[in-house]
Image (cartoon, rainbow, N blue to C red; front, top):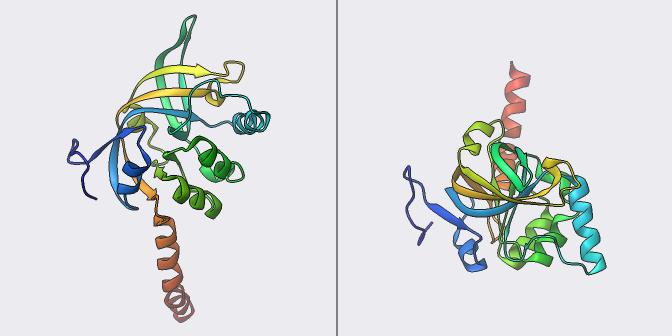
Length: 210
């Protein structure tokens, strides 16, 4: 990876939102820390509502164009003026939303998405078209990831439960996270699958021999 500012502790830092050109400079397998802002939700009803709003031609309740969108739950104190002190963030599995992500990526020109487990080939094609990367968050590392979130800036669609809202979070060194799918279509998941497939015959032979 070239041209990115050095971060601490020894990792590059990426500021969100990125431009498509900045996203295309990242490569599958890069390990980075994230600064800036992103939207986060774990809600299936939220994704369905976004799709309905797109179909109806209505604007989102908070800007999404060119932004970063994470499959991540957010928990915080609810104050009369809005979100209060952050308690934690926790990523969820992105494949749950495969049917909607290509549309969301293209419609809003998202340059970063993230969660656990990757996305479908249709989503990867949308990412290539737009200039978008997929960040993989470590499962079970909520305590570590929460240290990289300084504030919940706003919570759109407050009629939904907290984790389902479109929560805008401010980041300062979130991670480390892995660029699991880059904007050129390269995927660490594909590499792992190819490696496992290549070893399968030897593994089966070893089992039979044992």
